Image: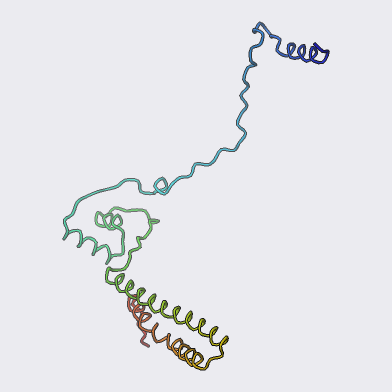
Length: 181
């Protein structure tokens, strides 16, 4: 055995020497250090932030349901606010107003208008693409026939706003925008 290896063995034996009666070669006690990381704030979801926590439920038939929701729509109140008013119970001032969507007819008309608008937009894109291809070919071949076709397509593009007039009018009608005055 060399001096350096003997010295290393002695040093490890000294460090592993038992203190206060522990047996030799036993592992040192584990020291638990406090976790210094900052704790994350608990995020509360919308259901945990509600001002009104209790849910009241009742059943209605089709006619009652329709009549109730018609009255809600007319009064522009949520169901909870409406019931609180009927019962003459003072509620919170800061309750949110319920936003109601449009009627089914409005949504149908708007959807049809958007479809018509997209079709017209697709036609315009196809026309522009064809015009660009023909312009490239006409420049390469300097052909009068192609030049006349390009001019016809340019005239068709100039007429595109007329194609958009009908879908735009339908969208405005669905949104109840009158162009009078």
